Image 1 (tube, rainbow, N blue to C red):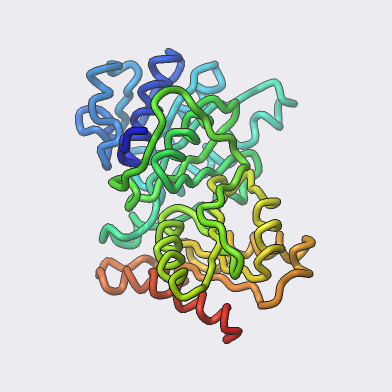
Image 2 (cartoon, helix red, strand yellow):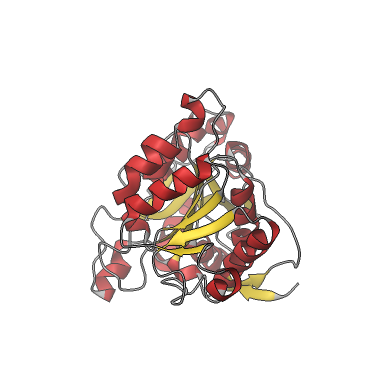
Length: 328
């Protein structure tokens, strides 16, 4: 299989779906000649024209509002929010309109809308351009929440999202855009609600998403030389969540660490802990469940402080060692 970047995988999915279905279009800021803030839509204006690559003013409520209306009328819009932080400006359109219409109209209305949004820190973009807000979206019934960690998943999950009949929030960590991975040529989709075991192990379960999957893998592979065998579960979709995969893993290892970049308070790590504590896996725990998350602070601009605000490899290694040794 050819190796391509995460950004190229997303572009490939968009390109192929727009070729397949003329109802698919992209709407957002600077997505035409500029190719989007991270270059994902480069070249697409020349290929599809300004009727399907629609550049908008700087108004997230207008972007999502227009996309919701188009979806209700049978189109399949992909709306790009330049930075995830700005999704806060369009929560009414996403949470009160798109998320609820299928339910409020008794299943007769569908809203086949995908909202793409780059998330996360690591680029020195400071507090208003570096947030991880996936838990906020998880809290709104009617939305699916997707966080691919590899190019393979970025393409396969985006194609699934575009085919979905109701709104999908598609979250892309900014540090992943340049990462490379094998991606099959041709049409494939990855179903929602199916986690991936990124690394099998017997001593400890780590549940992580996005960039934290890669950090956890790097640490786990190093610790394997010392005989510490870590299993890493990537949910891939937070809504729907593959609870069975997590329960099975924790039942096997007896230990659980959840790692995410979003701040700790009301983060999705708490949801995973609740799932495990009310399942059969709870009886197999031989250590307290732990979470390693972003700190409860705005993301700093200063690079040293920015790094300190979210989990790094050394933090993950420290937590693993503590859990395995029984030091809490």
